[in-house]
Length: 116
Image (cartoon, rainbow, N blue to C red):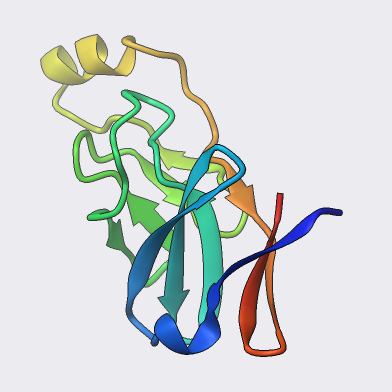
């Protein structure tokens, strides 16, 4: 495991998010009800940023660009490009269904650590 200091824990209050760059990766850190998540900030569908994505009560993040939905814990696709059939068929086929990159986190000595 390669645990890397990402951010002081006090700077990521519940309900907030922040982008950090770690070893060439742009990660989105989210504090959802005290749970810290680290995910790729880039949606695997169209390679657009997820920072403004909505987090649902079911523990998923919804891409603000094409509404694909990913599990915050596993990165598993819960819903891929759910547009109406004509548009969805075109947008959904721009790239094949791919999971979102997620990374384990922990807090140690007041720091959020991410395992890359």
